[in-house]
Image (cartoon, rainbow, N blue to C red; front, side):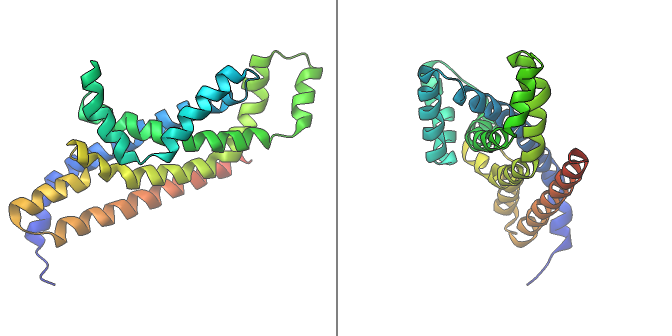
Length: 216
């Protein structure tokens, strides 16, 4: 293999731009998926079937369709209905919405794992439903599901290259652009491969650290 360090040096400005876009999509997509996933999970616990059924249908549909199809739909179809978003906003929304249907199941498992005695104790103390959820149930549930949520963060990171399909130039998009202009593929693809490994390892380390602190 003919390795060219000059190609690596020339690629670095593009790589830094792509890295910033990738991290932005990952962070914002994670925030949307974690927040919306919790909303889905709480709505699925309501006793009203007219709330449960629509939520169940929507989340099942999103979970069972490919993320790439959802990206194309949001980017190309929504403007025909009068709703136009930037490519970056569309990508973040699609990632967050798609993975919220998975984090919903994680939250549901965490909530169901809270011992029944905690619910009974809250009732005995005459706590309101809102305070019971806020002060008793959710802190325990979230503490239990941090590792599983962390796995989806890594999955979202690995799916960010799909944003290239809607013109978002994240790391892989920048590498492709550089390769087409300079006819060098090994160096840029190796650089982003190493970057994905480092980011994944760092995210795993931070999540393990958070998990250890939460279980104290």
